[in-house]
Amino acid sequence: MNTPFNGLELKLLRQFNQLSLEELGQHLECTRQYVHKVETGQTIPSIQFIQQAANYFNVPEELFTHVKPVLQEEQIHFRSLRSTKVTTKQVIIARGEYLKRLTEYLDSKLRLPKYDIQDSSRSGSIEAIAEQCRVEWGLGLGPISNMIRLCESHGVVVTTFKSLSTEVDALSLATARPIFVRNEAKESECRQRFDLAHELGHLVLHDGMVTGDRITESEANQFASAFLIPQTMMRTHFPTWFRAGRYDWDKLSEFKQTWKVSKAAILYRAKSLGLLTQEQYTSGVVTLRKRSEAITEKEDHLIPKERPELLQACFTMLAKKKIYAEDIAKALDMNVSFLENLVGIQIPKQPRTPKLVEESA
Image 1 (cartoon, rainbow, N blue to C red):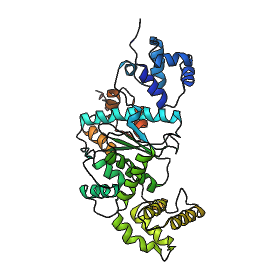
Image 2 (cartoon, rainbow, N blue to C red; image 1 turned 90 degrees about the vertical axis):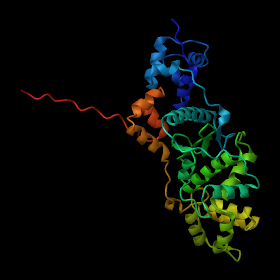
Image 3 (cartoon, rainbow, N blue to C red; image 1 turned 45 degrees about the vertical axis):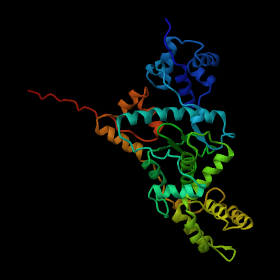
Image 4 (spheres, helix red, strand yellow; image 1 turned 120 degrees about the vertical axis):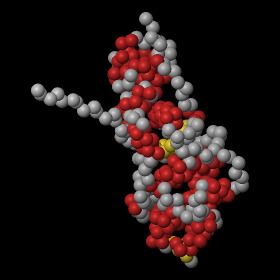
């Protein structure tokens, strides 16, 4: 008897767990060709195969019988697209799909912050647009204390991943409620903050556009620079760390710690504003390299780590409604361990009912 089977769900699970067709075939005692035919709908698997797959991935069998709309690759934006390995891209697509399903579930159960960044009515230069965003979001001209909290307050879900290499800085999912995913393999908090500002730039500048090319990436970088350090403040403080053609590296270090932007990004920002000549900028970059600060800078450990808060708050609120990890996982056709691996945090579990002890007569 044939069993309805959605092979795409098997493919997503395989990619999420970074398995090749051959590796999964070995685990399920079949050939890679058979797994491929099952995933592409060319073959309807036996009940035994479905049971084996469900047991191996520790998911309910019902997962393979549900048909759901799946995130398309063009909805996932991340840098280094051309150099990124195919296997890495596949893991990202699978992770993005499961995160999309989770946020849709959360939106159905809770009143999350309204997403209000999609307005593309702003006009002018990228510099001016970044300044308008600061005004609209009540940020003034000072340093942004917490980039994750800022994104979450405007309805963006922020989460992290640990399993991928540094070839992917960060990624965003262009869904009804955008999702930013940071790569914790990148140690510099300043660069993490810049990545989030970069992704915000895509939302503000490129709503409905395909990104990833040199032009849109450059524009997002320009937005991030202008958004993190307004030109008024850069021009005001520039003389404190660059005077008479010489760098004051101690003062530049202080400026970095105040604005939580890498020294490399500060130098580039100053050059973009015409405060540094190309020669002066190159000299500063060379000095950073000589000081072994080309990637990790000596003050990086002094910048406080920022952690996502919205997802944890959602799970806490659901627990107060007596909706626990087990309920969420069941609704998403997952198991609890899969769900916690997806979000990278522990989720409140259903309290155990205490056993009644009979009193002896």
